[in-house]
Image (cartoon, rainbow, N blue to C red; front, side, top):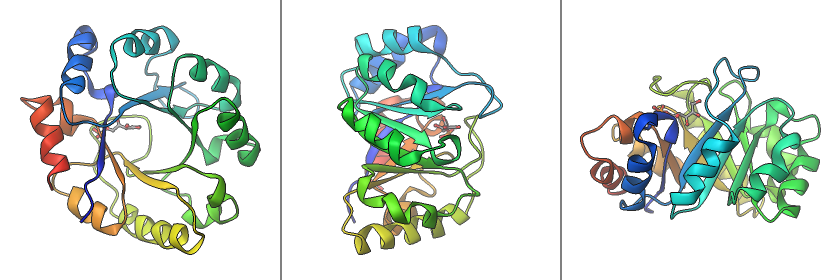
Length: 217
Ligand SMILES: O=C(CO)[C@@H](O)[C@H](O)COP(=O)(O)O
């Protein structure tokens, strides 16, 4: 079984000790920092914005995997490129012209990701899968950390893996929400390449140990 990339979601970090938690992720086997940007419109919650991401970027020693949970995400593509994001993921449900958004993300030198809410079928990506670097399947309804994993995400992962292989696409599959040591193995077996974990990493006695536990499933 392949070893998954692990992307701790800073939404579950201790914001009063953000530098400490960023350093702990730096000193772990984690591969990326997962950064959730929420606008209170596309999702019923606000997270943090540009000044906080700028502060994270100053200390982060691993690539920034930015997930925009905002309406009309094209407005912020340039901003997150300038902040040094490696990956920029937009929601299919938030884009009027998804293909154009993907082109713009790539034009700014970032990997282009598309996130799907639990109700959105992976088949909606069939006609642009060749242009996507990363598909983020939400394992929960987006907006909050610490929710229970929606089991149908496993079927979606298998379907998406099949589509990617069939289309000769190089897109990675990322699972976001409700991921922990209890379901990490079956997700990777189903085709997941990247596991995003918030509470499983930050609400634990040791950030490096919990990252390792997810990597060594
Ligand atoms: O995007 C989101 C939630 O909307 C995630 O990135 C969460 O931050 C994951 O948290 P856990 O479900 O792992 O606690």
